[in-house]
Image (cartoon, rainbow, N blue to C red):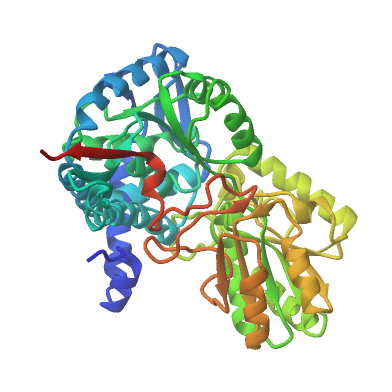
Length: 523
């Protein structure tokens, strides 16, 4: 039976937190010995390099050069698609049990290397050790959960009724072909591996374009899949700018499907271009503007903790991050006071420090965007805490900012409407519960949402009326983030997604396949 990896929980349960930190520290030492290495793309099982390379630096400290990466082009994508198309001929006919065996082997290898992989994530995108390990855990979970789903569904082959006495019919789900996998920076293990596994385990082949912020961890996963026995050409990795590499994936006629996690605007443009000549499957998760509601009967302590973790975990750089809160006017002052106090005490700093909760933003664009939003918030509302970039000591060499809470903004202000992807939380009050639901739903997005209430009638109305794909009630661990594979399928409604079927859930894999009805006449 599938079980979540839960690394931190297991160490804590065994009272071995010291061992957890020791292993992470040793992994950091190992990773540092590899700084400055030159990396290659993987096309058809071969390492492909380019004359020009780009130096890849860490958001923790931009003086640290993590490695030198090739600069892929549309030509490299075409080569990778051709390799994937050729590999599809045999991979699509490989029985699902063999595909499952390879994916489980990859999960075992990742589990053995999890601290090394987590250390790379910390250096590449600035996650603290707990969130970096959780990222790798989720990647492992996807491999194992989807393997179990393939077995549970008998490879998605179903015996049907016979229309005639001499007929035998069955429904067989078959792969499409080559899939483009376009991954984000914020979950460079979980999302990249999860999307790739969804395509691969169902018999498709992939061309993967990782985020330019996290290419090295993608190279590590290419090594893992090769070590696990994945045939050449099934997993191809092309590193390069989104316009050229992603653009070619979307326009290439031999790409049968795209799976993408990123911004709404990019996703919408991609959808229009990809199906220009004929309808083709595009599985996209397109962000969120996730609300939490705090009612007058809420446990304020739990609500403060849940909102704090959801808003400022990984510096607000999660598509599920809580970025707006609607609080009943009777409890707003107490809630805000306690939330501001706890936010002010959050440890902000180098994510390699075990005490750090809020690390750096992932890149310079996010760093500048935060500062623009902070000025806007100060102009149009009241900033209660945060609002500044941190430029003291060693932190001046990275992209560090203060978690920020703003109140007093008009409820239709752009900071209440736009996905920010930085640690900024907007707070407003409401009087009637119906108004809170209306405000929560007054968004183009519909990814996650949370409520804190002591009234069952309010909870039921929230569950009946909220327009979001992933919802949580009275969840102190996090108001809107932290979905677990096999427990909480993760997918958005409205502008947050294109299919309405969540990752890590029972309906995800069928999106990578098409149905064939097979009828055989029995003489």
